[in-house]
Length: 151
Image 1 (tube, rainbow, N blue to C red):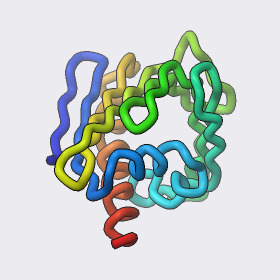
Image 2 (image 1 turned 90 degrees about the vertical axis):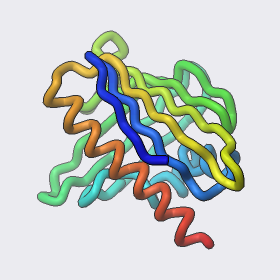
Image 3 (image 1 turned 180 degrees about the horizontal axis):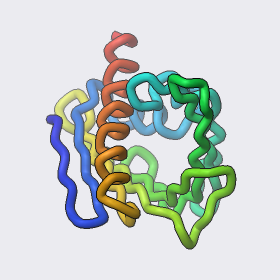
């Protein structure tokens, strides 16, 4: 399953991951695993601080091919282990709840794997949505590769 949808200020991407939901959720919530797969093509995750829990925060450092580091941060709004994550998303040095977009990650069992649906809401522009589309597809491809390497 690979698909995507852009509607107004919302972007949805989906992908089948060849691992059970518990393992996929762990890869999304444990920093030591997260840094191994996170990032669009050409981007390296140099740091991930994931304090997973409602009201708690995360911070991700993405190093671009030119060496520039972009920070993404936010606050967890909803956490249902192995089922759902919902969190704010802001690019820049400090998480800004009021200006943040929202990311929802759904994990559903599918055979021996997991179907993931990522919905990114409140995106500020058409150009930003197009960039996020490529970035999310790249991230999910990295997640697939993480589990392909493990088998």
